Image (tube, rainbow, N blue to C red; front, top):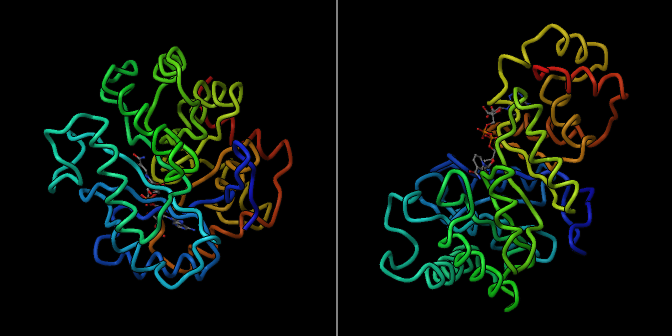
Length: 275
Ligand SMILES: NC(=O)c1ccc[n+]([C@@H]2O[C@H](COP(=O)([O-])OP(=O)(O)OC[C@H]3O[C@@H](n4cnc5c(N)ncnc54)[C@H](OP(=O)(O)O)[C@@H]3O)[C@@H](O)[C@H]2O)c1
């Protein structure tokens, strides 16, 4: 798998996401690895992920060849028993959550540890800052190589940057064509050396991707619409995620690494956003 370098760490260019796979998580993670994915996204949040099943899927593999990303999720994002003491301080919750992730994943470090979402809509709160400091301690202790934040706006990032502490290596966001493919947040990331991970590229943009211009582009390049979208994402500097449950689609999606879109082609996809 092709890699990019983020804060000195090689990071695969395309991630496989394990949300919503439930009892198929282990088999589908294994299938994704067999198809050629080396980066796996999960979370210690039983509501949407079965992190322990990811651990089962990778148990006999060479850890050093995998890129494992997991997340810390605030209590209001958890429904099953949280992987930490709900009454503990935010810092202790982070430590307990990551310890549980490492147990699930049968490893002593994750490659990326992501704050699943800030606790307020419009800024990084004092609780988020405590969480971020605790995540930084996990990084200093060698249990997380890189840190990230998910589901953030530009205002979240600006308020995170007001505080001392490490800068995120990653932003992971839902990427809507209607917002210029998250134009504002991506610009902030570009300016600060943050790698932008894009999810829901297909599912959040069904209407835009049904446009005749996209279908024509796919026909002209001999690729499928998902391949065009993932390729667009790569070429404008994103790390795409796919959550496909179909092994044929896993291979199809990965094939976006093997062709290029021209500048004019990229403009067709870029222009799907309203001005
Ligand atoms: N941080 C967060 O809050 C957050 C939120 C959402 C997601 N995520 C992460 O991002 C990952 C991906 O989520 P997502 O929302 O992008 O995707 P997703 O909801 O898992 O689904 C991808 C969809 O695209 C379809 N698809 C993929 N490749 C295709 C192809 N080649 N042809 C036709 N259909 C194709 C899949 O159908 P088939 O299964 O039939 O292929 C599926 O319906 C998640 O698993 C999770 O790890 C993170």
